[in-house]
Image (cartoon, rainbow, N blue to C red; front, side):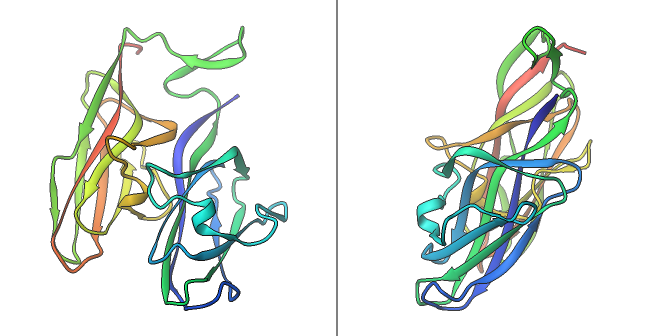
Length: 260
């Protein structure tokens, strides 16, 4: 018995030398030891998407491509329109993924790559119970489940600066995050953390295009993210640009009333 909790693993290649797609550089994504990871969406932000890429699951020696692929063919450059794999791929806790990339644009390049998926947690989730009849985890019998959005309002970051925002969840109900939208006027990095649990939502800071969808194309979470009533979601932000920036984050989901 297990349940899934939304999580993102990412990796940065900030200084890729100009090339023809044959000079690969390698780095690894190390999966946390607390849970297996399952992903199905790939999103990137790059100076140019003309990059060749290979992904190796080191725990089993398995490449996910027959040969290198062009990133533009297997990745989306906005979280609202990600590349979605035909089936989820699971990586063991404590294992590593080797990511090999090579610029093919002929110009100096940079890449931020993100795998959207879920940590696989053992046991019953805080929002559900195991049903022995169906052998599935089902939601608890809440008195009401109502749509709701928590947001940050508009925040400002100085050029090259940092700031943080807080989203305080009301005491009247737990909250289940199912979609994320928002905007940023400049390139910024974001990090989300559930303060009550001390739980990060990602392993590295994420470019806003890789986490904030919009009204037409929201970031539909691969798995829900449960927030206890009275908890706080902290959002750290870093402005990568030389100009002042504004941003806003919306956590969209449902309030869960009266199960405990």
